[in-house]
Amino acid sequence: MAYQVPQLPYPYDALEVAIDEATMQLHHDKHHQSYVDKANEALDGTDWADRPVEQILAQIEQLPERKRTLFRNNGGGHANHTLFWEIMSPEGGGEPEGALREALEDAFGGVPTFKEAFAQAATSLFGSGWAWLVWDGESLRIEQTANQDSPHMQGLMPVLGLDVWEHAYYLRYQNRRPDYVQAWWDVVHWPEVARRYEQARESAAGEGLVGKMRRAIAG
Ligand code: MN
Image (cartoon, rainbow, N blue to C red):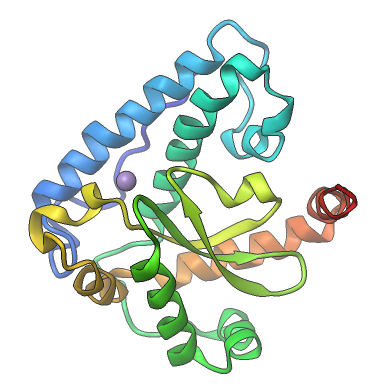
């Protein structure tokens, strides 16, 4: 079945404290729809069409070359935005708890220092792209990707992601990306981030990620 834009798990105006209704509507209904349409176009008529988008991104070098850039940009866009909607909530904010909190303390020295480093990655990224918290098979770390590149393309499991394309914030924040990043923490849905962290750890325990990292290191 072709990819579809998932329904937002909350109304367009639910994240108003950080992201305005008009931005949510355009971003979800127009931008995400366009990524989905073009990702479907890229896979149309191939035997890749039924596979999970994350799985294809993790094996992107195996896609026929003429399909690869179209899918990288749009399959990546589909995966990234699907995560983005889910890790936000009107009940968001506060701080993570449990195993995720401990892992953040191990990797960054504490939740405040993690937030500071993540915000720095998000605000310093030049041009369009994403800031990520990823699980690399051994620990949590912060990454940046350009355009709609997905951490899955590097064998990394995204746990938290922030869209810093101008379309994500420009209506309300114009050029003030740091204000958008700062406000965004109030809608981060930590229980979903924690669920993704657990899921990443489970999948990394299997062959998939470790094997992929070994292959990557071996070049
Ligand atoms: Mn976007």
